[in-house]
Amino acid sequence: MNEPPSNVTTHMGIARVMAVTLAEYGLDPEAIFHASGLTLDPQQAMDERVAAVAMQKVWRQVVVDTGDEAFGLKYAQNMHPAALQGLGFAWIASSTLYDAFRRLVRYYRIISSAGEVILHEEDGSARLWYKIPAPKGVAAPASLDAALAVFIQLCRFTKGMQFKPARVEMQRVAPKDPTPFTSFFQCPISYDCPENCLYFSLQELNAALPMASPELARVNDQIVIDYLKRYDKDNIVSQVRASIIECLPSGAPGQESIASAMNTSPRSLQRKLSEEGVSYKQLLEDVRKDLAQQYLKESGRSIGEVTFLLGFTEPSNFARSFKRWTGITPHEYREQ
Image 1 (tube, rainbow, N blue to C red):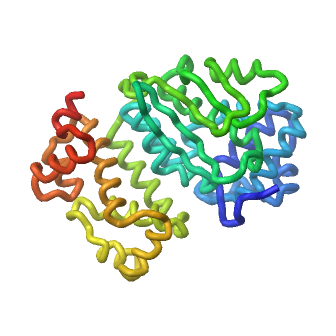
Image 2 (image 1 turned 30 degrees about the horizontal axis):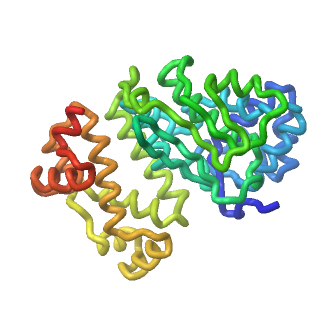
């Protein structure tokens, strides 16, 4: 069976929640981790990384040891936003669940570099696709169950335990006892699907959250960006995005200045981005668009302030770009 590359890693918080869950079953977390090639040391810093290959071994073993095919759901119920550090706190402070999911999409690599999250909306609904770039069956089913369940658990932490998706599609084969899955997700579930997806009402995702704090969210966004710059050095797209975000308030940065900040040449940067299938201009546009929508949802920011933060010289220039991105003006977007 194929395994994730050895340089693919997972956040320490994921391992810590696993240890807590195993202890609840009366198992010895240290022994299970050690058998999979991992050291479970309480003194390890929370911002460290563990090998995804070893964690996949743990996921497969714990289902054997517990005899519980719904282990991933039990794991998710122990997940607290604090385990994800900056991303978790930014999630709590997000203005809406839609904003929180956009952060999850943008910064998912802080959780794991083994996959990605894609958010797509159409006809009044939103689909969150948990994409694993590997053949079906490579990832332990319990780890995929846990990923989808953790996303729902985070929603319930901010929205209330009554929150539920519209429907769920899972790659796993139908469990022998589907009751725990039905009880957790509280919605229709399809098994043996091509992908792992959660579906939501767009109206519900756009509803204001009671614990929203845009300023606190931005502070934790920066913590996540700084973290990824330290631990995600192999991902050139993440590095460029982080550098662009830092430079924007001083004006739209050119490719040359970003290359200089990253201690590389413009030609080398262009080549590396090309290998990833993106261009610098595209990344700059995407970052500006994402931040513009985020800032405009924060009522305390004027259009002029948003213009400055995105590196535009005039509000009219920002308005033209925003209309090109979304089809409406910044004022219309804010009113909606």
